[in-house]
Length: 113
Length: 115
Image 1 (cartoon, each protein chain N blue to C red):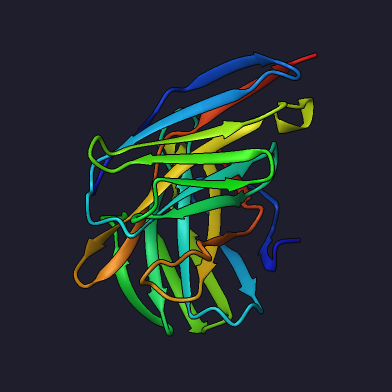
Image 2: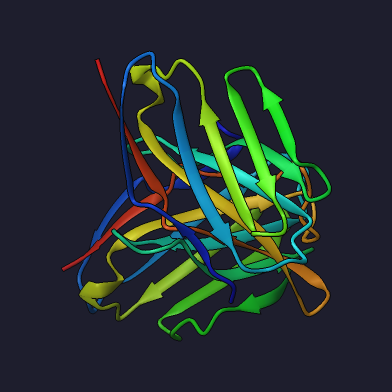
């Protein structure tokens, strides 16, 4: 399989911006994803970026992609306590003619009031 | 509700028991997946089904046996599990296995405890 690396924890103050970083290994990934997991729930797709894009903005979320360095980041502006969750970076790598999703370990975002 | 429903939400079973996890989606997706989520470890892809055909088996022990009777339903049959199999088992579905901007839709998972 391929590797997706993320830091395990991030702590921010409410109202600040959060930046969650991710590195991946497979340069053939067509799409890269960010998922959010709240306690007791499955993973929810937050946003995605196509590999030929450098940036995608969706309300408070900004995704930056550096294909050369295989680095993906998720910026959450004006972070709220409701944003506290685990955030997973994911890529799809090509195997046997099909794309297989691979996830990182997840970054636990803790938002302090 | 995400459109992918998993039952039961919680399961406690002994090592000699046989049980099954169920996953159901009515999103019209044609690919379904089983993942294992353990504490402090990456999500582990276990099985992939595309149009009811198993296309990936990620070196999963035979005590886990998947079944996909149709594109909407996926089962994971469990027998003679070990305590280290305790984890959150997540089902997901997608439009196709090529990966797309739609990503994967996950269920809420079954929290399995093996005693």
